[in-house]
Image (cartoon, rainbow, N blue to C red; front, top):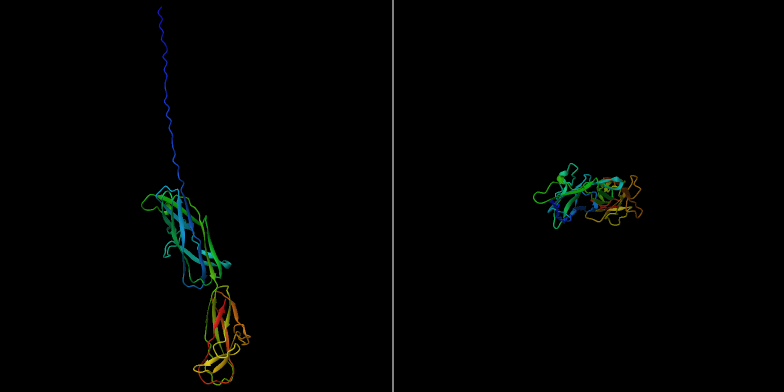
Length: 321
């Protein structure tokens, strides 16, 4: 018997294994910040009729940026009132233009077109730009009380900034920005100083012949002082030779003869008005921000009549506050 043997074929399969190394480049995280300088007007006169202008500055800074440019936008709320003594409000505004016609506004309010913007050129992933902010305190606020005033823009809910990167051409609008809404803070300050202005009317005793009886007349001192400012009004003895507070002297024009008279604080003409010395007194008050008047009661007493002529004296009014 012929036997046939067929050996079973054995196949060895080789599987090639390829090792692939994947390298990840580090991804830079973009960070942008915004800072606004505090605004301090220093001393402010409530009686100023003209506006007081100041220049502040704001700075946008970005790091880790992946685009050649970044469009940055900063918003603030619309209330621009500094609060002072007794919750009195001082009116002012912040603007994005030098003509001060475009109040700095907010994306979330009606004046969204007046958002403060900046274009930040990026080099090696970083860039920074400082832009001006134009500030103004309005004149004609005579009802302000003396003291410190301030307003804090205290971040979330009242301030915010956002950014968007772009490569070239026209910058995107603030409303298309998809960046995060970040808050920032700053404070505005001013100090309203005490001030007073004064004016007075002339006193005229009219024409006199023989002075056989006392003649009276009045004048008015008008004082306008900052609200709440305490003040004192004093009168000097005048320019007449030998004058005292008790007896001031008018001098004849073109001569040296004098005519005695007196000035008082009260209608009874018993309280001599002077500077507080020599038996005289002064008139005091507290400013209201509006004109306040004090009557000067004058008496030309009976006396020997001097030569005919025109007699006059000059009294200096001093307001201390």
